[in-house]
Amino acid sequence: MSTIITDIFFDLDHTLWDFDKNSEMAFDRIFKANYPGISTADFIEKYMPINQACWKLYQHDKITHQEVRYNRLKFSFDALNYEISDPDIEAIANDYIELLTENNHLFDGTIEILEYLKPKYKLHIITNGFAGVQDKKIRNAQLSGYFATITNSELAGVKKPNSIIFDYAVNLAQASKERCIMIGDCLDADVNGALNAGLDAIFFNDKQIEAPENIKQINHLLELKKYL
Image (cartoon, rainbow, N blue to C red; front, top):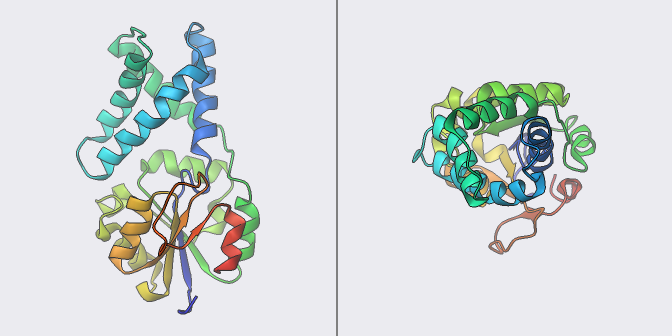
């Protein structure tokens, strides 16, 4: 790194906390207990891209928090041609949020890289996730002790990629932008959002999708040692 980095900002879901695995486990419990006719694997196949699409709309303020909760389930059941009532969708949404934070699988290398980085840098989180849920994830996964600050979109009043949330996080960290770097799995929200706000960025590209050549990227968290 040409500039001395003092502060590292991580995204949480899909970067440190394995959202896909934890999500599938939560739905599996719900379906086995209440909807044994639904295949969890078939549901997840529909749900994952729909959930991502809903979150993208939410990031850009095109739908609300409540619409994310409802739409991602309603559209997934529709894609399966499974008829379900709105009260049942609401019940599943509530159970899902409750059960989701009971599963705390992290990406391979998460604890090792945090242990490596913590003595050298101040570590922080910037997340678009709902505050109460994200706090539970961090606490239950025993990640709290690694991070000096945690910024969520509810605190900042805006979501990544809006530069205001990065400004908020940097001010909260009492850091300077030129000495900060953001690490996350979303090119739009995490990488371009950070770069446009004046921070450096590293793309956590564990799915190895095509990305611009000028973007620093890693496929495994331990590869951060090459940069930091």
